Length: 153
Image 1: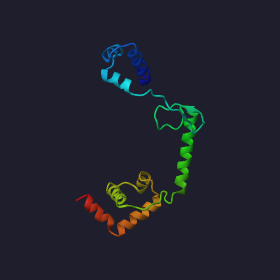
Image 2: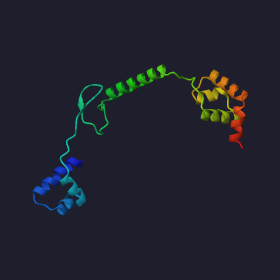
Image 3: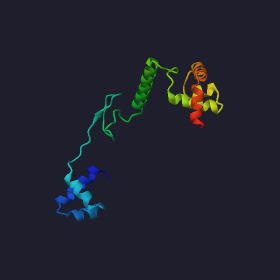
Image 4: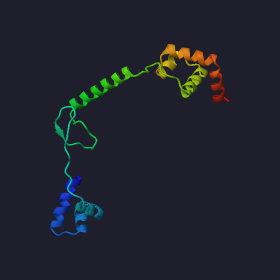
């Protein structure tokens, strides 16, 4: 039974002269629920207009922006994927991006474990050539040894 149906039944039984306790027994609900149904205003679901097809629909949740048709879902998903790909293409970084202290920690740990550059590049979504240059750089300037000493005391 939906809340709207419950409110309607409770108000009908109240108009017949039944007490809250009797209504609760008849509908198998608590007296508190009866009181709540009598206090609240009649809820009318708000309709929204689907962003994809333009038709009206009643959302089950307030944040819903598209209707429940599969075509609308597919259209929206395709559009979101396309927008994501366009944002990625415009991004100043791609697979070549700055290295942070955290990324250096992870790289040092992987080197200690004997993982290949190809594996690390795939794991961290990095360009293999750029990763190799970075590893050579941190080996030459001593950063790698410092990190390994901190990790494996």
